[in-house]
Figure 1 (cartoon, one colour):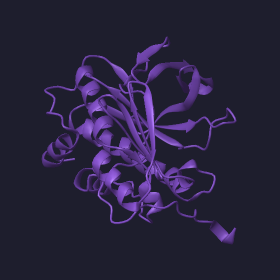
Figure 2: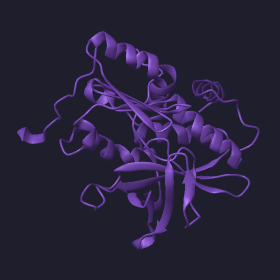
Figure 3: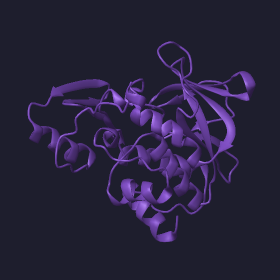
Figure 4: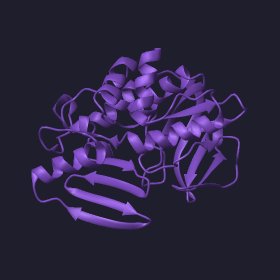
Amino acid sequence: MDTAQTAAYLRRIGVERPAAPTTAALRELHLAHLRSVPFENLSLHQGEEVDLTEQDLFAKIVERGRGGFCYELNGLFAALLAALGFEVTLLQARVYGDSGRPGIPYDHLALRVRTEDGGDWLADIGFGTHSHLPLDLTERGEQKDPGGTFSIAEAPGGDLDVLKDGKPQYVIDQRPRALEDFTAGAWYHRTSPKSHFTRSLVCTLITGTGRVTLSGRKLTVTTGGEREVTELATDAEVLTAYETHFGISLEEVPQVAKPVRVGGR
């Protein structure tokens, strides 16, 4: 990511270029990203490709003002952090399902970020409703966050479990990965009827007072713990909600697409 792209990305999230890759700078970038770039899966239902290259992700998230899911958001955020002097490692994780068991390998992309003042952090701006700030990867006690109470625990094989309010969220494999390693995981979540991403639409963003989420025609605005749910009656209302709350301009309302089935099954 060159200097001009870095500057454009920082404008996208409303942050000045930090003077140094410190823990305080990482916290500011992390929260600003969550408040500026939505977690959304609209591309999956609009027939758009999900290309895990820095060039394509920059064009989508920065130039087109869109959001994305974990591979896209954390993938490009890693490039920004590296351009700003942070030491960044891409990590693959498996998300815990309703069964209590982890999902497929490369189910999720998260980031280990090391700062010049000695911090070792889990940065994740691509997991929907998760921590607002980076989590300390060396801490094994509770970590209070505006998004909940988090903890990181040792798991078999040198892995790490990430928990929110006592419930396992995902298990991290600590070996370094490259962005292209996540291609199969992205393809699975874009095409499989077993993926929750293919079953529904979601677009969600942290706000200064809570969170706003649009799922299909249901708009949920959370303010200070209070939830207001509105069923949007018309296509015009849905399109206006995407533009007003997320800065996403669409020509037509996204509809849940039928997942691609391989071999006619």
